[in-house]
Figure 1 (cartoon, rainbow, N blue to C red):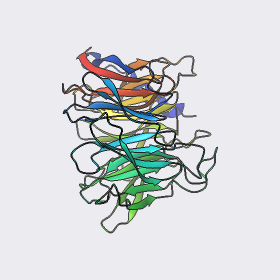
Figure 2: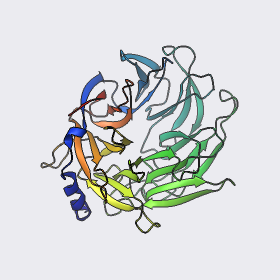
Figure 3: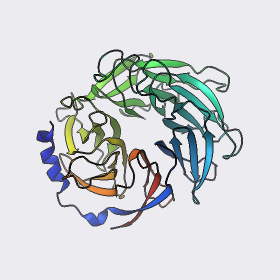
Length: 407
């Protein structure tokens, strides 16, 4: 279906690179069974001690692990509609302390009702039950991000459902598109309604997004992965939204198409790339680089396949060489008997310095220990090296992978 695209870059995976320059990672299990599903993980300073803590979202709870003891604490339990599905940290009320936006009511097959968006407001210290304040609702709400896409100087909350209203499978590309909702924080967010506008409603099956200053104009754009491919949404000074297609996605696969996960990465020489999993809930690790002609769709390269149900992408400089590596979460064990590693787990693709087209060396961080539903990267111990945090679906766990000495 796609091997004719993959062979040149799969050879590049085995091209000689100085393996001694890539760090070793030590695994620490924070919780072997945080819930039936660990839907999301993030890092933030929950208790205000200047250290990044780890936050995990399960079907009915939000918990956090305090750095450096990693003692587990509960923010909320059983107070939102099942299932909780996504979370983002922000000081929403301006009191200098971290709050959270949380997406819940996750019912992926119900495209008519459900889907709740709320503010988890701090009411005391980190151990006091947090207040749940409704923000809005949308069926199949699935991902949220903070970013200043309106250019106001203050971040807005971007909420994106997985599917359009009243759409049905298996051809999720038909029917109404996904409403990409942009909420502004009002002056009194605890009592005032949050103003909302729709950035776009023409695309289908939007699985993930990133808010980032993509074009260097000083405000954020929305880069997203959808059934139709990879796009960037931009709002002009007059309030008009525009949509630009960057990548095709995998349109040959069946029954699912397009792209699933997405992150923008940077190289030491200033070049950019876009990393995706394709198609939706797919089997390919894909990289897009700016078109050689200067305009049109970005050039698509398949870096690795088959990855069984890729379900997380992150970009970070793990080895300190200035190039951001691609961190991939694999959710299921491979059905390909010849696949090594079989997974599930965490994989890293290290760009070969100066390579054109980009070539990568694959490093296995975890093989079989975490059925990755979500992952993030952050420097948790302040040593200047990015660590990895992953949460599992089938494995139910939360893990830290400590970035240690070079191999």
